[in-house]
Image (tube, rainbow over all chains, first blue to last red; front, side, top):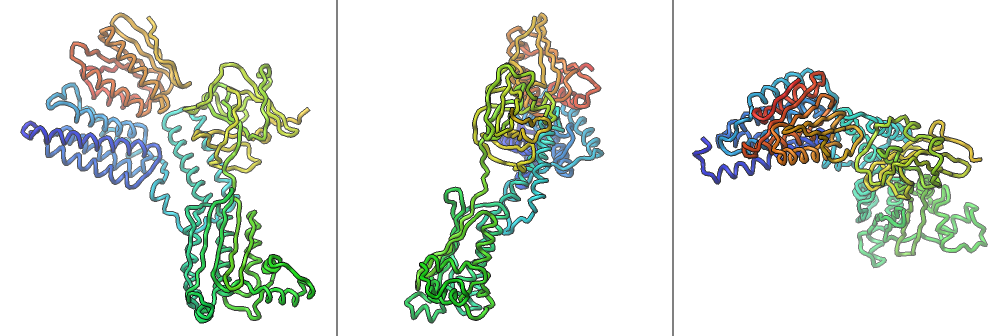
Length: 510
Length: 125
């Protein structure tokens, strides 16, 4: 039948079909490595279905029959959430290879290919796979992961730590796994845990803080004011504790700005200002910190009133002549307010004090500037938690694993101390077969030892290379008292050892 | 005569090759996971070249001590079969697989593999 169709059409069918098979194979490879992308799965199903239909039309009966089997295999794999048996994994890969072969063969040149025998194997594997229990190994990626809600993940630090330790342990198991599906699956679990940790460690600021713009407009209406709230928050992310402190700060400061700063439309008109006031919330990264500023174009702080209230409350002497800066600082004094009445919005005297206390808890600071008649700016600075780590990277004895210790340790090579030195693999209970790929450090066959010193601590360790000072990224932070952490050095996952916490490796320096 | 093969990149896979007249013997042992694919790629390419140079009639692949092979490595074998099929009939050589029925992965996958080229591949357990 295919012979009766124009050659150009057949050629087009082959080209398009081979592209489809290539896409199916790529998606399948991602899925079995634990990377799950709904859009790619839909495209894969569409490709297979279209290929089946096209093959029928152009008379490629063998391709049609095999594609039908591939559809069955993929449906079964989907039911098992792509945590499939080795046989199923292999036969899907082989089916795509088989399709590629059939599509490349000239018409009638399929001798030597036993499609019936292959389909029989497929059927048997389908039958067996339906009875084998499997566990899921899905790593959500792509748009799913990007749809982060404007909320703070409030997992406790303890829970985060437990997750980090579980992830690190899984990574160790993966390194020590002998191979095959178990190693692939452990890799998938490690990837899942690492991605989950990354997603709960950081909170994007823009969706979190910009929601206050809407709330502020509603509040302005309540107060009989007209306000526009602008936000310039970029794509900054920070950990949940800092995000929570910044969130509370913005709530208080914006409320204060609306209640105390922005004037009524009448007063603004009288002062020669636009009737609509403006509050601007900006955040940027500056010298290793997040600088958040909230500015308003309102009336500014009434410094005379602050001074009078401070004298009244005994915070300063009546004869004192505080500077403008000192007067503004009084606004942060616990319970301080220039309001005679407590309003529904602010004026309880807890606002700016609460802001400063909350920000101080995450290691930040709050400053305020104000110009009479022109408005005020509150500037919040919080440090960005360090994700980088300086470390000495070296290979494990045997050269199959990348290891590191913090750069606070000073390494000295010892040519003769190998036998007495501790084996890091044994210390972390990894077998000699544990391994990684793509290690970039030059491995030496020599029996080397490195002596590590930090303060009064000293330990000699077997090594497969001379330590190199590098900068790594903390991708799965564990507490300082945990003996291991997985860091990334130039994209290579590396086990960071904390020798002081490894069993049997602590020794007081002589 | 021992055949010089590309050096091993990982600790788990071992490959030995030998030339015996018009036959090449290839013995895999250990495990071939995804990290072993480049090595298997190189070995198979080398064997194919040697087979053509020798005008070999047969390549015997002993997999009896290969405990695992993942799908990426399997694809190398599929491509190999394709390369042999694409040769002129006069240059084609047969591939004989020695399998171990006690290793689960070999039971189905080698049978499926042979379906790619039943006239070229034979399996002995």
